[in-house]
Image (tube, rainbow, N blue to C red; front, top):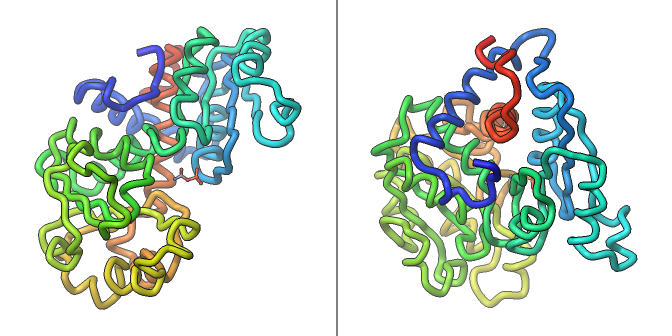
Length: 310
Ligand code: CP
């Protein structure tokens, strides 16, 4: 592959290769000197036109730990505020002989457009309500670390399904890897035609679904979408769809809780579940983000093998 824009372009074999490569980078990240010369001489532009904490910081760390030169670019400090188009912006950056662009943008389809006009490798870091493929890969990595497999696991994805780019990549990724996927949400947060998501089951009843699940994947409730809406209020949402200490009693003993972050504590997760020492893997997901992004950069750019099996 030259790009990572849509996870559905990748097969189970491709995804397994990324996860295995990510696992081999674990050793690098656990040394005192967390750096290998694998991508020395390569230049990657991180073009973030929307806010980010986890994705942006872990891409930058992944690039630095692979000895890549990085250029962080985007947002209100660029000439896009003077009206410069995405095409002219990208072609300007490409004049520097760069090797890849990591793109986060509020517009669905922006990474594909960047790929079309740039000619370099493009990695989608979240576009509108469309895709977030490296998030799906780090989720798969985290789940595989805990269970030793993905195939056959029962995964429930709970919350704002309709507006979620995490779902846009995670559901197809889980299906490609052979998991069983249930989406769980109030009708107001489901897309108009939920069957196109490709999930195995669709329900509004979290309490009925919970006892079956190995992985409970809570999505961020986008407060701006709920406030002012007739149903549900944040309090009603927490009551019916929040993962609380009380609701934990319905979970299987070995079940885990995932969340892509940032978490609205007290809405989709209470503090007890968010910080649960056995069940919550939220900070493991953050760490997996560096490993998986190192693997994607290495596999797309084809650096030296130096450090991969270190
Ligand atoms: N999960 C995720 O994409 O988080 P950020 O928006 O902080 O990058």
